[in-house]
Length: 391
Image (tube, rainbow, N blue to C red; front, side, top):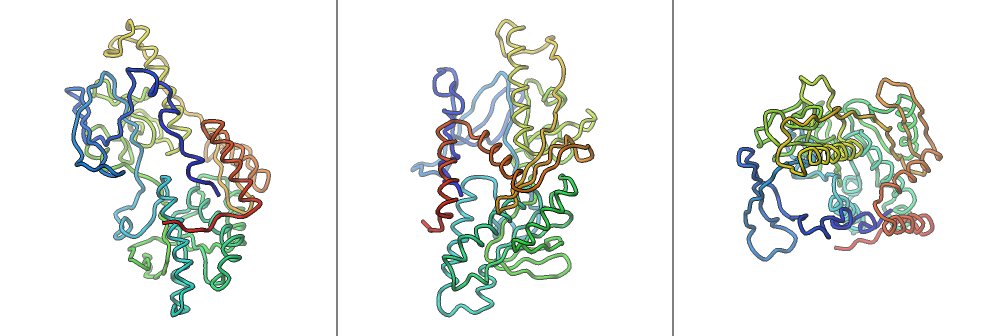
């Protein structure tokens, strides 16, 4: 539906200081370790992206350190997931999924492919019934119905989408919205399988009950967990393996280190729940820390080095703004409850889709990209999705 460049924005445009302030820098590198005693971060230049020389190491000193390294897809240690499944966390993941789907469609039209071979090649399996898995299943089914079956008429009856979930789909949404999503997706052709994946092989997955499910495209969307980088830091740990923080996003017993977003979680002794891995959580935690650091700087004569003796004020409080998910065919879900057990407004259908689209557009950071996104949507509505394969 969207061109990838329509939703990508250079980091220097997002934060002007990185382009204009001589004391602000963006470094394209991987953090390999942190020495909290020396207040140093150890880094290594990235080895991909066309660099002609070997990566080299360097270190960066800090007064205050904020760790916001995100999370990685949870594989639960299941054999074969990392080798054979596609994840959906970054732009390049979406590009690879698109290329594989279109390649499978082209290969399925070649002579000599058996009926069973076509069914396996064109079977798209999604593991995980959270918002990402449901949205992907809905949009993929929509793509198949409106675009694939018109272009690939010889194999249109072989392509199917199956969503595998161990429990209920969209478990954080209102019950009525979950039921609506199930009914709508089933009507759109999505098959539901309740089960737990035991193993993943090159062309099939094996469920815990022994059922074998062939696939041509496997998308893994079972949530996120702590990254390998976070696991090796030897910092306090919250429930779920994230970096443990207190109410002010500080890492206890480690001076001048803070953490936020998907990589951080409240320590058990704080009595606070682990917050969901959502952009709205990380965004508000970031704003909270900005205000906190500005407060420290003003009260300490503009120095960022020490916060000893300076009152931090009230701790961070998260208020959930609601959840939304598209289910394809111009339908979406809007759940404005502040928690799973609270009461609140829940909507489903075309009006919800308009709300979802409008909210999505407001999250695009500048007017140029908003214009591109709107143009992409309009082009897709009039001419359909682009199903050409490049690369």
